Amino acid sequence: MKKLGVLLSHPVQYYSPFFKELAKAVDLTVYYCYQPNSKEQGVGFGVAFQWDIPLLEGYNYEFINNAKEVKKRIKDGNFDLFIVIAWNYIAAHQALEACKSFNIPIYARGDSQLSTRPLWFRCLKRIYFSKFLSKFDGFLSPSQRFEEYLLFYGVSKDKIIFCPHFVDNNFFRETKFSSLKEKINTKKNYGFYENEILLLFCGKFIDKKRPLDFLHALKVLKEKKVNVGGLLVGDGILRKKMQDYSIKHKLNAVFLGFLNQRE
Image (cartoon, rainbow, N blue to C red; front, side):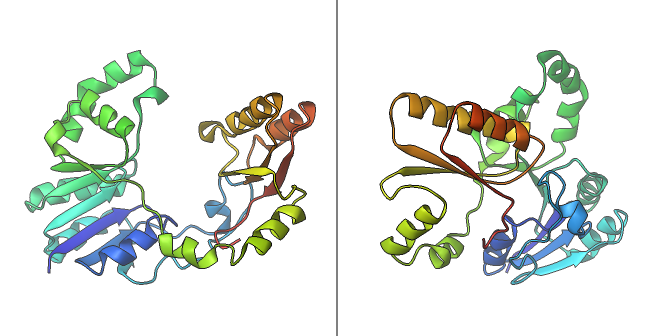
């Protein structure tokens, strides 16, 4: 069985199900740099919390005390391939150098986009960043925009492998409405009509998640006489602005605040 090592800054709710499935096919070890406490986990969510689903079950993992331990783990691991998830932390750079030293292929996965930076910055960054990216043997790209990002910085297209984001379908199958009646009652409990089209926004109320676009869409649909309501799950610095917008335009929108995964 092939040996695969993965480095990630901390346990992430949408990676853990993937690691659990991956461990069935390869000899997998995941290395984490730290375990966030409730306050750290809640940054950007507007509330301190811990995820209510198991993030460390079904695969081998280890928390490393500091970035220097990465080199030893890679040296002793005898991996056929090593993957770093993002590269904006010291341990990822040390993993890259370690893999180069021990002739272990190393891939990177990220989701950066060119549109988040002005053109002058991208051109200046290209001078040195192209050399950095050239050290990786391959990239796992979840989107067209990340592929465009890599190509702009000189990565060869044949080094890019499409690897979309992961969805734990079993989780949603197990937690779906058991009947149409239950679905209708849930809508009524939130103040919506039985025949009302209900749209859901679930995420942080921060600029890059563009939650105000969701409210604007509700406004446009209302103006077109579409019988539609909006359910917003999440929290963040834009919440008051969003609520004010909803009140101003008399939108049928319900704000539930932050809810954990099972909720």
